Amino acid sequence: MIAVDTYEWLPGGYFLIHHVDGHMGKDEVKAIEIIGYDASSQNYTTHSYDNQGNFSAYQANLLDRAWTILGKSERFTGMFSEDSNTLTGSWELSNDGKNWVQWMDIKLTKVI
Image 1 (spheres, rainbow, N blue to C red):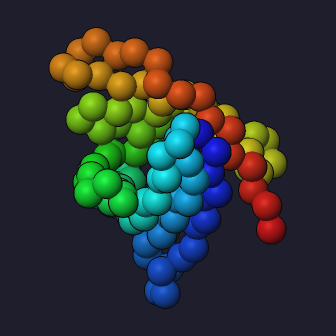
Image 2 (cartoon, rainbow, N blue to C red; image 1 turned 45 degrees about the horizontal axis):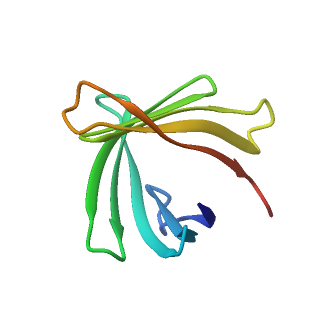
């Protein structure tokens, strides 16, 4: 997968908008994700929508520099660099929510 991920704050600063524009093999991948923070659970909630009509909801957590995301059939574990400019991690998939297989490794680098 080759993609450009763009993040921007929704006016007010409560929600982060994540745009994905890329290709996975020959398939075009376009998605938008809305990330919010739930202070009562101290977790992030995310909702993602893509150009194939897929919708996903996730729970995410940031502990020190470790970023984890858990969905019904996808999960991610990653680590931010010390300067917070790079996120490196791995996505896994599951058909049953119990047995997980490697899906893809990612590296996101902040470009200003």
